[in-house]
Length: 290
Picture 1 (cartoon, rainbow, N blue to C red):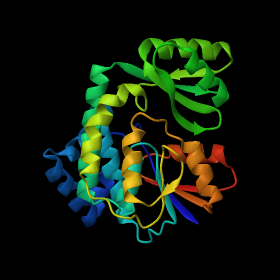
Picture 2: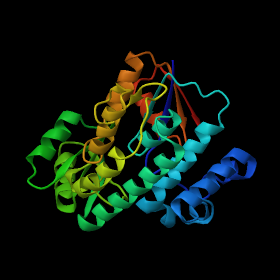
Picture 3: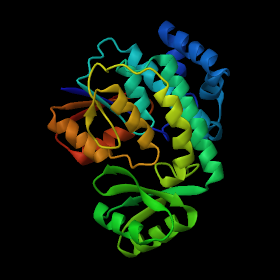
Picture 4: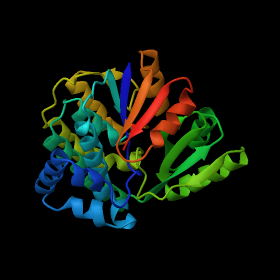
């Protein structure tokens, strides 16, 4: 079975999507439609902006979504048996699955980005990648710290991202390093997928529940529980919960494989998810279309 997967924030780069704009009439139309929907020319930032311009959450998220969806819509034989997206990528997957319209998907992503950026400014936080140690130890260390620090991304065996307030993440990194882990601070705007995103969650919930979702063409394996979902109301609830819950990527991929996935194609900028899937299961085939 063919599984298509979509990346999240962090894969943006200057010039992203420009080759599609130049060579595809459909892509150009979608880019220009996006400019109209958003009320500003996001294509100027994508094609000619700096890395710092694109690092801002309010720009990065709609840019990655737009690039990913345009790649999917440009494919001649897009025939997924199942879909998944890493964090933000879940919205790209839902549009690719026709559960969300292009316009509604883009508007929700932009509202999500603005809400998350606002939450970052109100509640300062950070994230760190923890390598080479079991998730049980990471969970144990985080639970012992009084402040806010939680596992945020279960990316693959031996790679977990933690998220929380500045002091608590620092303490967690010190304790995990003492247990033999390698800790890498991430250059992010805030503490995504943690309780510090509660403000954004409240803002996004109303927007999501007032948007029309329909049954997707195939199951969407969602981050919050790793399960394939097709019921619109459950999908909506999971999208809201995702902002303060961990991305269970390892579990999602394992469940997709159990349910028959043998070939994973990453759609959108970069190829980060390919590498994670190889570490989760080296026997499945992977590819990327950027």
